[in-house]
Image 1 (cartoon, rainbow, N blue to C red):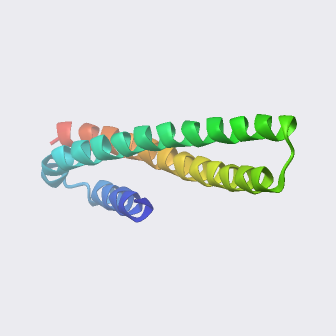
Image 2: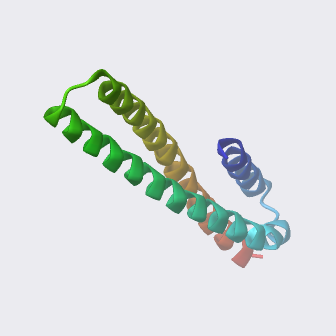
Length: 113
C-alpha cells in the first residue's frame, strides 16, 4: 500500500509541474477516487491500530496480575505489532494529507483554464 500511495503522490506532483490545465482537469476524478481509497485504508488501519493497542494494554494488565513467561512473550508481540501499525498509520495519514493538498492545487489550476 505504501508503494501505491507514493506513486499517487509522485504522479500528482508531476501533473502539477506540467501546468496543463486541461490534463489536470481530466485527472481530478482519478485523484478523487485515489483519495477515497486511501481514506478507507486509513480508517481500517486506525481500527486495527486501536485494537492492537487495547489488546497490548489488556495483556500488560494481565502481566501485573500474574507474571509469566508466555504473557511476557505475548505482550512483546502485541507491543511490537502496535508500534508497527502506528508507524504505518502515521505514514498513511501524512501521505493522504499530501494528496489532499495536491488535489486542491489541481482544482485551482483546472479552474484557471
